[in-house]
Image (cartoon, rainbow, N blue to C red):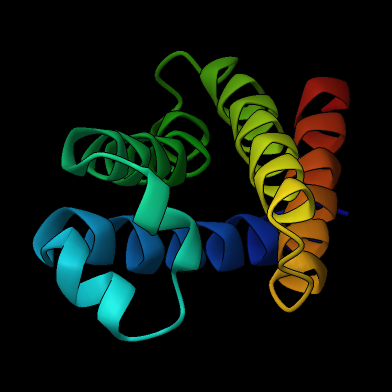
Length: 122
């Protein structure tokens, strides 16, 4: 079980560092122009950067505390935070009738929930 949790934690960290980094580094207008981030049309630059920062902090939170042994309770808490991020992402996409990103959001939600449950019980 521990190996499966580490694999899932690694996948979550990679996904959220990539997604969050993109939101922090690239201008919102450039992301909207790519056609993959329609939800950003109705969001401010600050909101997009804030989402990116939360995603990066969540990615670090699902790895570093458990890896270092420093405050390991923060790992499942970070995973719960990522579940919340995905609940809001799902809601935004459903309200906007954007169905293409829903499977990825649902998968990330399930992986974060698996991590939270697994690490709370470890």
